[in-house]
Image 1 (tube, rainbow, N blue to C red):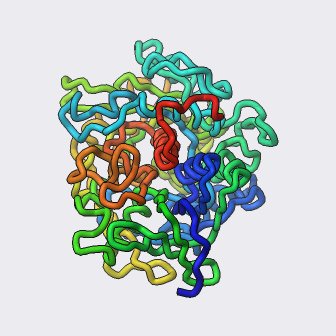
Image 2: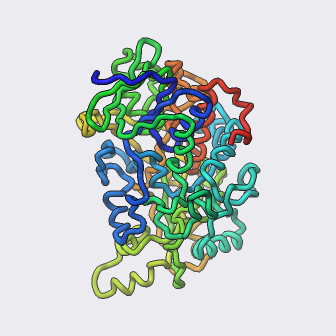
Length: 539
């Protein structure tokens, strides 16, 4: 070992959505905490959103798939045996650096799918256990939205008014009204009014590339300044390669720093906050030295039950120019009309329909949401008829846990330091495909009702693996789960997992709001705070 750092109360692995929220909370409660992040800070001058070649950057250097962009701080992922490609980002802020900022909460029914529908498993906690943390997190992430949605539990006013709908979403909303179906403005982590030195959204569009105005919230903006002010230590360029242990306890982590030196960070508690792929990988890498059954994996559940949220898409092409490229691409309106189970459809559980805006000029030409436009004499004519003239609706389904959908260690693929890469094995179940088909049929009706002259669909968006969930799930039964209701390992009392891998089931909704709230709750549990005492007074 080349170097040994000073011991701390808590070491957190990962500075993304969950790691940032957890570190902020634990530092404010007086514990000495170090967070290790293998990526670095993303500064406004490096964001390509305002450059002429922004769409080229999206397809290459800033692609959400690490296997495509191949940055030095990424690790490769073997996805040759998966129906869906994984999308993630390593940096301070994690994948919130490259997200659409849609910010729903899981619904009460999502925590009880075994009881309600006889599938999946029930969570050991419910919506009300997370409710106070949802409110804290909404304030920290400066969420925009509109109170009063009849499809969800009552909640207070959002910190900001809702994002403007845009012309395409307005037409779709009117179509939902005529059909008598639910819709509501999304909750979004996007400023619609100035907040400190961050400016309100100017509708420039490519939120997934980053926001040089700071309008679209990411964890590096929302949580990390206050976490550092509270005394937290953040080390970037720190690639954790192993969780170290003695019998029955973890003792810290080993990481490789930017110079290539191997460093040991001792800690009284180890908290994993990577994602459903990265956390499973690290646990599997570390378990080899712990004991024959794999410490923290005696249930053989680590890496199993990978869930992605399979998604389809239906796009309408309109005669009128909708200026569809203007505004946050993934934040407008949602419909949860078909969210809950109706067995007459032939399947259980349901989907969320989310309206998204048009692609940019290069994406339009290359067929981002539609078939590629033909080259030749008619290219410009067809381009003009489509660019800005489309509105799309995604159909996001509820994945259910399957132990054969999993993360393992690749046989030969390694990262730049020679550490084995993760391998994902994943197949979309027929129930999800049936749900997408039904959702495309219903939302094709919506787009035609909205006035689309042409409706096209994609039955599975294979590049939509943004939600990496379920591979170290929480549960009351230690034989069927990895951590307990507070995210503490069943096997190792000072090992915690706080990212999306703890989800037992995933609903049909974007997970970030819920996973950050879980992390805040776990921080209180680790610090010994009475969970019931948490309220808005700590914001």
